[in-house]
Image (cartoon, rainbow, N blue to C red; front, top):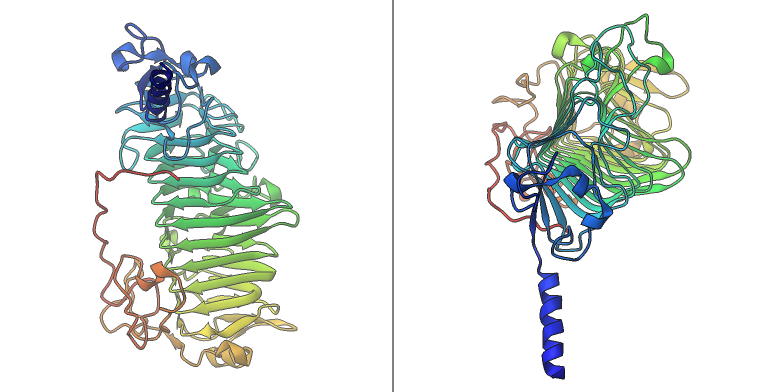
Length: 517
């Protein structure tokens, strides 16, 4: 009898551990409201009830999938957790959306303090799942600022993928219709959250698209298309430390709709557009940041700062294989394409980036500042102000060399006791001897790049770069589109693309299972 009881308990526990229920939710109860399919869906109020979350087979628990059906006009709040290897999945069925006139300040979808949750739009590129505000913005029914699409502060082990998150605030270039109140309206808010993956989403029309930091660690943002947004990705700290930020393979573009009129914009009343913004407000640090294989292009408007803009005293970051195009409508990139200020205790490595500016650029396309700077194998061109070098920058061995500079005259802005534009030779001679002094760099008026930054046959970028195969950065062994940089080659091509490169990498395989850990 005892053996039978023990066997029964084992089977019960095994059944609980291996559960993987499919439960369906719609705005209102449908059919028998048993949750067995969309025709018999539970109502949204059932999802939002704590009694619906737990370990019984009729509740939502580890390993279960909640299918969202049709248009749901009620904000949803996740009230339970998954577990390692058995997350709770919120899956959007074809045509499903969370849609309100303006998403609430707590999010159209709220995952605050939850763990082991996957939110899946159901198909690459966000073709199925939509989270949207429908009437918030310039000239629309409301101009609400406290609006968020997905809210997941204090959360851990969360994946958000394959969604279209749109229209948290549709801003038009008009006299200021609402004062800036960063980060809101926000598409994805994850302050103080760790082990987060945000990928393969399309995000447009918000003040800030993705905002994190606040002591959160291990955040990956990749394969997203982000546009019509003032800040694309922002990571901020106060007096704490955030560690492990990976931002790669994204397309960041066209924030110009967040411009305001010159008469309405002054100081803090201005939106200042950034692709990636890392910042601190008091103390704190951001460590182990990698920003690579991204494309920054389109119209960056009048009131931008930089496509990558960092302001800190103790940041550690590596920036490589990115392409920055600031040529649309010949707009200025006011603080450049890369403003890499990491502070007196900071470290920055910038390799194999391609920067093409506009002829109206007034400030340096690139700024580097920190205690340990390594700026090699980059291509910077298309401006009368190629680089701004402050007086407090310190280079590693060979840390300002093997670059290709495209221009003429004196486009190098250097600060010592005073600041002035320097010629190529003057720029190099003023560098510390440890920097390499541009001995293997090239300055030319004809780099021979396409409009998208791809080197053409015979381009001078060929063989200018140092071989960085021993850097320990595995993705750096390939250019931005997957063309291999050979470890045995005596020298690499400078810039984000190999000579003869520029073709898209093969499509990723489909139908693969995803393991959340």
